[in-house]
Length: 341
Image (tube, rainbow, N blue to C red):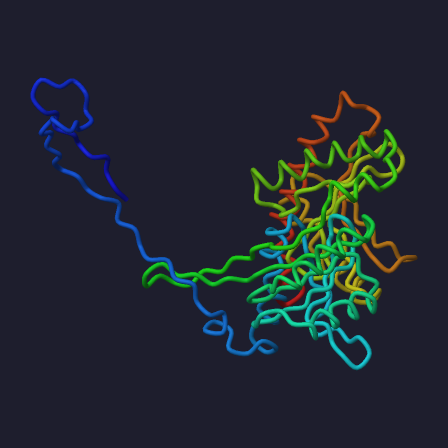
């Protein structure tokens, strides 16, 4: 905190600024009191890469996703690929893409570049993220080259993790992107979306911007030409979603897919046992869709709406934001209790 200097003008001068022949006197000046910014070695915070940093990164994917404009959900830590194991396997919820993440607390090396490509192939990933203490120029150039020579369905990111401290403050971290896909080049090469797809993209761009900028609901930044979007709940295997559904309806929902039908139905039934209290807190009835013929289950709120009815988009957008925020408010604690988190 600092105050603006109060200037005492010299005799016969109207300007507040000192002149060479003006014996202006400055008083009551308080200079800015800046702290000293220091960069720490990440190993001061995470001594061991495998047992300290990787679990921390897996638990803090939301922060990494925010740096990249994604909504990341953890699928598996130390995911096997042949005789090797990937540090973090995740999913970009907004686009339904598989994400592989390899991390280092050292400068990047050729060994990890080779592993990264192996893991991407092994999991048929669309998004490849390399997090390191330092990104060597030759490896940044390699990621740039891969982005330039692959299509829009494959993206490579190089991220530097930095730990900072001001004076004796608590340390803070940041994810700094140093290699990113060339979205413009890839979009030009991609097939042009249809008018309907562009309408979906325009609507969902407004939705995610509103949720991100005004409610901190998501880290997503770029909409896709699709009729649905899902957002992280903070609980693996459970997402919040918004979609233009069949039958001229739009839907806001809690979607349960933990990878196992029995686990999904068990969680659904546990929540449904509290249906009366949940709907009272939500403020209106919900549709409880156990979906016995499918692996997943869903709890949803519906209203009428079609992407073709442009005049109703503002109203649907307001409804969608209100419903998604309410779902999160009503279900987050209940999910944590039901899942034992």
